[in-house]
Image (cartoon, rainbow, N blue to C red; front, side, top):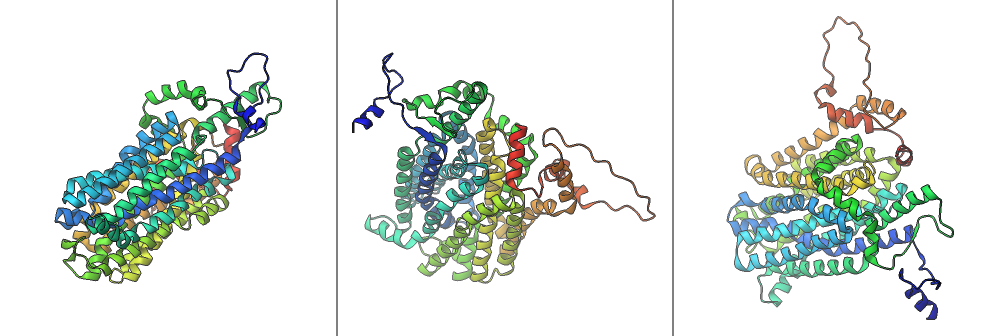
Length: 544
């Protein structure tokens, strides 16, 4: 106890000449392990709220609005709110750390769950949309949690650290759609409409997630990573301090001192405009452009197909015209089938994340991106061709979730290592903003496409979006160009390639890649490489 008291008495304001025992240094790996554990636990709890809103939201929208044309409005508002809040949350994290940004987003989701309950009670469609917007802000917070997991991760483990946090949301997200019947019992016990019960459970889970992050995410991973970077720069200039350990830093006596070294610098950068800085940093890195295309494209395909699938399943099971009496009058069997199908889809999105994270680290970022978009094309083919079978639709949604997971994990990992550390947080915010915007557009048009072209036409539209990203990556010319790009330095603009002209009597046919935009061909050709992720990371570190 005396030794413990001596350690606790250590402050920066000690008396001159009096020797105080220093606090033990904080090791990078131990802080990283603790950060992943707390982030994963919070994701598990917050996933319940998101899963319930996704599975029941479209039914509530049709019931409260009185028209199936509004079926995609919940998904649209959720993704639009996530897009609009991504940069503000990223800017808040850049100034005050990851904990502040994550807790703020989850608190907004908690308020949104309460508003959805109020909308069910009052029958007000506008209140439903407001509550859905709050849940969308929480979705943006959950997305940024995956980037918080790699702030302290080592290069060779970055994909696995990110996927571990993504995987943690599996239990909550899968449980959310299946809370329909237990939630109905909770709603009846509280004297509320049965459909409001799942959102009561969601609110409790979100409150627990906020408390967990507030208490456990200490030290803040982003601020701690900056301390390590500043300490490494100081050591490189003056030499390592006696008795210091690699990858460690002495715990500050005052928690406010953690961000003092970078406060003035970050304030100046924030004033320059987060969006402009993020786009500028991304444009300067072909790998970042490819990563953004993968993340945004995969999310657009997933939202287009998934957002109105519950409505299609309801009409498939209960018969045409059943969507006009969606949430209050739908039979229990229909709701169970919808909940089970969405649960399988969400399990595909998150359950295999550790495997895909390992594959991202071992096989390469871009190879895993190709795998993801191949799965997306297979998903829309199965779901569209088997639209009359609930089994085929369920299989298609599982493949849809797997494709989204592979493309998102590999794309997010590639993005985190493609820009400088001082630009990383704001570029990640831009990524989530564009991801949400693409999902908002997809959710907005999904209901209209379903009304005009049916479920097969909806899947065809999703396949077209996936093909736009997949086709350039599959061209042999892109892989050949990458070998030339990989043999040289990554710094500087790509050098023009000299081509020989071979005389021929036949008319010259245009190359398939000639129809692609020049910036997309440059991004693919400069970043596609058979090298391992470790080799890329070491080369990037040397060039920096």
